[in-house]
Length: 79
Image 1 (cartoon, rainbow, N blue to C red):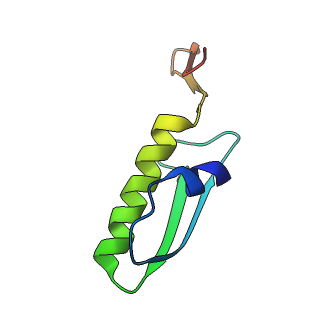
Image 2 (image 1 turned 180 degrees about the horizontal axis):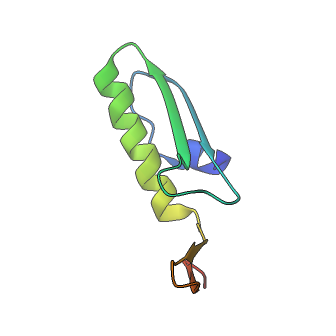
Image 3 (image 1 turned 45 degrees about the vertical axis):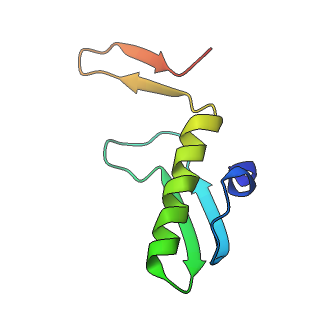
């Protein structure tokens, strides 16, 4: 995720950017990604957060194993 922070198009007025992506088992509704942006104006910060998460989804290979109530499972996003 660190590379994504520098890959996302920088928006003028952004002071700092950070992102963390959880690993391991997550339950439905758990927070998987946290994006933090500081700027003097919130619209700029929101725009940078959007750019950051869009870049993360596009550039980082996120694999997940989905478990179903019937006991089956399925890997998503694997090559």
